[in-house]
Length: 80
Image 1 (tube, helix red, strand yellow):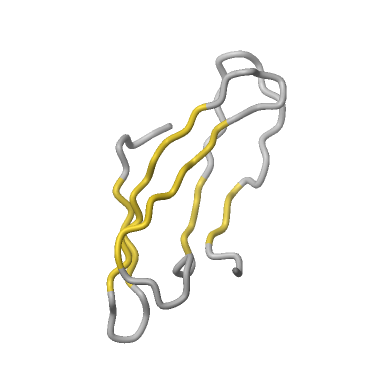
Image 2 (cartoon, rainbow, N blue to C red; image 1 turned 135 degrees about the vertical axis):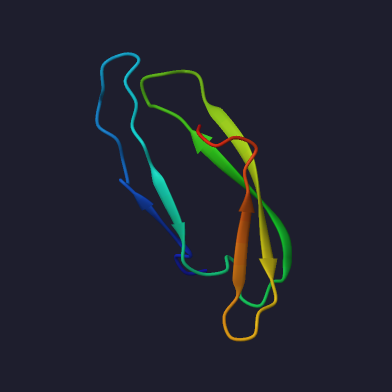
């Protein structure tokens, strides 16, 4: 399976308590070649220094297109 998304920045540096890092995910291809339908994706937010981990479920809708595959992501919230 190839790299179907890019993440920017790839990692965050250590920040003071309460500070934030904004990440951007760009979906550049379908995760599974030829797949059409709804796919559940899990976004994990974690730190090696913290015990808590957050998980968010995203629904990626892949529709059949004429030339390229059309992608749509339904988010439960705007920001994590």
